[in-house]
View (cartoon, rainbow, N blue to C red):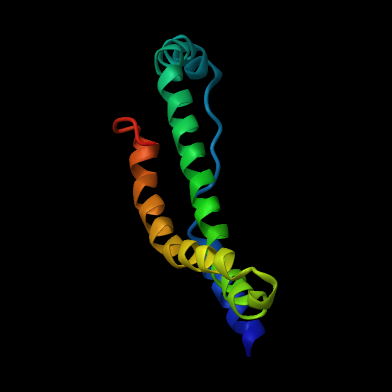
Length: 121
């Protein structure tokens, strides 16, 4: 049953795809100078957008990994308390507990970074 359902889904999905059409070389030749001019104008904006969105993605990854500090902190508070790890465990629990909110904040800021609406650090 699942095979037939998958086959029907694939047939319906591929039935409405547009066919590829070739572009006239004269059209490409006529549009190339304007495209190069626009690329020269927009390249600084593109580079700054890529930089700021890359920074945003790195901060999202950092916040995602910080969530793992919560279980590590709980282990340090419980099993590592006799070995003097209680203080570090509490710090990791606090950092891991606030990490989901930081992640939400960074995800909300990502479109602002991509659109380069001001400098978001």
